[in-house]
Length: 199
Length: 199
Image 1: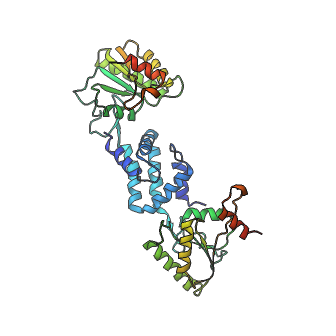
Image 2 (image 1 turned 180 degrees about the vertical axis):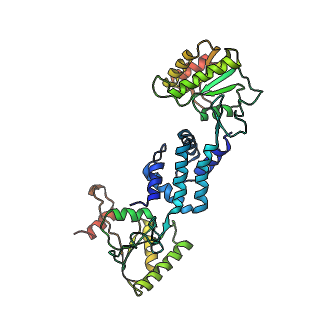
Image 3 (image 1 turned 120 degrees about the vertical axis):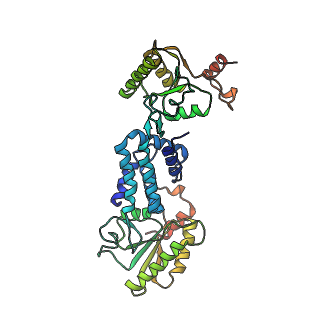
């Protein structure tokens, strides 16, 4: 019943996270209503995502002229401290805090089980190579910025095993009461973390 | 902080209905993760929406070879019965019911006030012209398929005024208890409609 281009659009866009067939239909008619110029702009915006580069050091996505991202490219940032994050958006949130002067390393979305996928195994190997080549085999500190959840804990311990011996210290982000949070409603784990990290 | 192509994508896609900056960010990284081939397919699906034609008779969007849509093009469908609908998706739902053998006319999204926009005024004029030219000045029946809401009622009565004299009958879709609905929970208006339309 739908004209073919609309059908194709709905089929494709309803595969995207949190977009179902109904929303995809609405989007299609909204885009049609915007007219040719606007639609071309949306198509271009998607196509342009492929102009992005992946940093060969840390796997962060960027659009710098250089191959490396602006963080790995910055000589002021410590090479010997590496924070392992799950995804780009985690890296960006941590950067916004303006507290960290080391490098990052993106490991990719962690599965809800106790294994790494093939890509993640390659990345861990790549990180070991970088440490071997650039830091003479040992980093000063590796910070594991996994989420403070059961799976985050599990993956952090798996990564710790993988990286045994390649860093003087392996740490995790501190746990505590979030700013604006209330002690009364904090869970025991959080309060435990807050007590340990008091100061 | 975001690389330019991602920023552009987020700015643009968060203007779409029910997509906010957070979902647009998720979509951007999801699309990047799919890789070049898939992203090109998404860009193409948007671009292809512009290949759609608008039927010069009823304003339905289609991808037929002819200028007219498959409904206006079908000689088996009555020319002298016209159902006015607000939008394409309404037309498609009504067609799925497989009960109607007349033509349609899309008036476009009705505003939440008692006026028509410039485009809608043009379309009403266009409908009158079609009736003048093709039906000798008078249709057999015009069915107003506005939603059974306060604004739907308001717009239906405004359209009725505009079309005074160009149709023998002007009707609206019948109100009643929806299939699967329960009498106990139906509102008074619905039950009133159901009593009038009993049979």
